[in-house]
Length: 162
Image 1 (cartoon, rainbow, N blue to C red):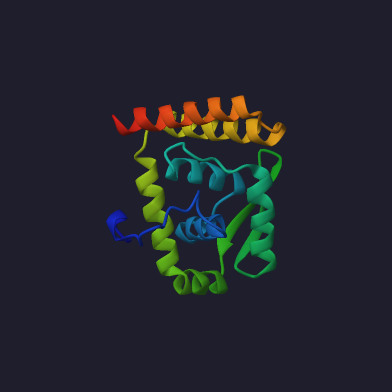
Image 2 (cartoon, rainbow, N blue to C red; image 1 turned 90 degrees about the horizontal axis):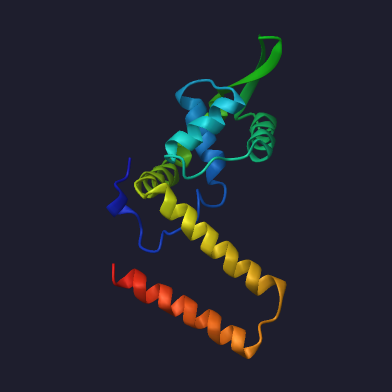
């Protein structure tokens, strides 16, 4: 794997980056065949609780990977619930080999971000959401724009003083 310091400058992609979850799921399935819920939990563990993909993201992506012939899905009967066990196929292994540098960068980024306290990540996401909602719901008056700018600048100064 690539060390965090070896990441290219400016590689501050959000989350796994475009198409990154697909590669993460393939990598996890390559390690061992898994159920969809197991994959959701594995991603959450991988990110130290910073990210848990929704079932609405994971299952359609798994179906797409099956349709592309990258993984297979086998039905099993467990406790009367039929679950799909996903296993890597030759084409999936080839894709991981072809994308190995990108996979290494994704996992290095994940390891780096997983070191950050979860409460800081939560606070950052809440902060970004609050600003997006404020800017998306209304046109700010000159006074509101000035107040928001003052709040943001003050937060930046406080962070820089840490």
